[in-house]
Image (cartoon, rainbow, N blue to C red; front, side, top):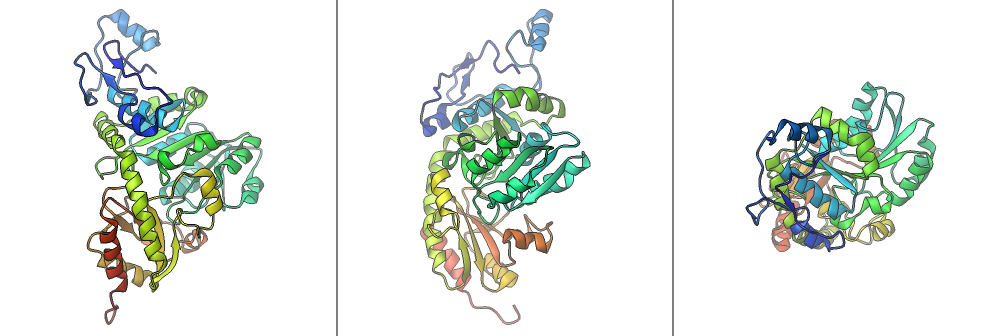
Length: 409
């Protein structure tokens, strides 16, 4: 795919620069006007100087852009910045995080293939594995992602892909990515990792052996609740053999405007995530001692069940906290309805703190048995910590959790 017309200059950014610098400068293209901020190219197509140039452009002999469904200068900047940040050979963006997951799986699979996936997945990801893939003759086996023995046992001669997220949504379980990657590769399969909860700043799945990494850029990468987007990171072989033509022909393209917003989000990603994680750690310590909390799960605490794996594969915790409120669903609803600062929303990674009740929102389509397998109880809430002062958030949590139960409630 052509990436850059002759009139656009690439900003020289080395792969060895620190992430915070790459997030500001990586992938920048400047037009003949020398703009400071990345230019927003709102165009469907591109004009050629001659019929000969058009023919050369379509044949791949002449570098440049052809059609914004294939590539676009603003989108290309976002993809290159993500590639540099992740340390990948290639990056391609999509219209949403779920478009990235779907494309990463379907582009490499065909009828008769088999997928092994961790059962602790976002509800829509489970739909892809359990409902969508079988429509195309692709079978799957769900396993406890923490149990390496189950990954090994699930492998079949037709297994072509492994799929997991770590930390998981919403119970923040951790999967040993390197160990699962080794199992996948011995089976001749690729490992696809959804890294959205860790962000590219706190976990590098490709360095741990993963073959493909996907993100919902809607979350931390935008970070301010504005646009949808997704991105797939991989090597050039996967891009050329599977992903490139799938995206080109099926068209789940990211809009140039959304790409521009995401570029602006990347500029502040490091400072936002650092602040959010520090606040989440403080809030988790508060919740751990609260009398209304029956269970607390936070990857930054030593009492996390997979704390040893976290120390090996992550450089920090998360801005996500899962906690179970006493009183089941009624107790969880009472707490959520009592917040004055924290909003009720199924989004995460936002500048604003948000809480959701997974059992009735993001994972409501799962059976009660499937939710129990993942530890999603009726009293469980998932908190995404934002940029507010952590003391104000703690006060908000304490007030809502400590409010007396009203008669009939």
